[in-house]
Image 1 (cartoon, rainbow, N blue to C red):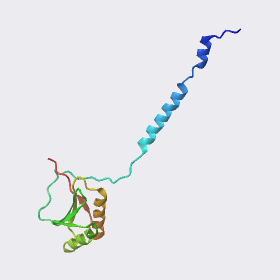
Image 2 (image 1 turned 90 degrees about the horizontal axis):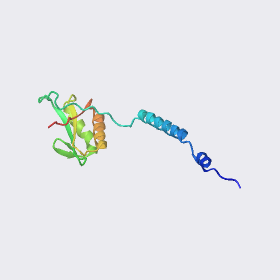
Image 3 (image 1 turned 180 degrees about the vertical axis):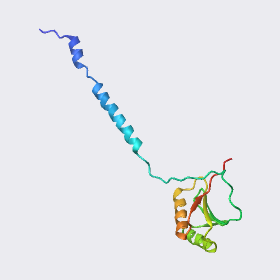
Image 4 (image 1 turned 135 degrees about the vertical axis):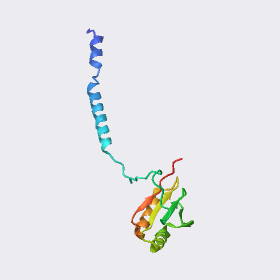
Amino acid sequence: MRKKNRESDADEAQIDLTPMLDVVFIMLIFFIVVASFLKEAGIEVNRPDANNSPPNPDATSIAVTITGDDQIWMENRRIDIRAARANIARLLASDPEQSFSVKTEPGASAGVLVEVADAAREAGVKQVNWAAEEKK
């Protein structure tokens, strides 16, 4: 009978993990590099600092406020998004050079903000301004 050498069987049963680890590290590096090139879609908004010069009190401005539950307020009354363009155009008729600003409260959705800005541009507003948050 033939004797089995246990030491030689143990050597033959081992699997070299070095090539597998090399592949895993190469894949990790690949995914890190690819992820650094991905850019999420979105709107870049540059909001001014609240510490800039205060607005001129003599200048007239159209101000719209969007509350946290997506209600639109203009001239101390609530308006519908479908009537925003008509109201803005009416106010612009008296002074076409008026500035237009939108203030949003926390919780307001970006979709309503974009709809108000689009309505203002359709009404003839040259520049839509976003009000800065006051620092306390």
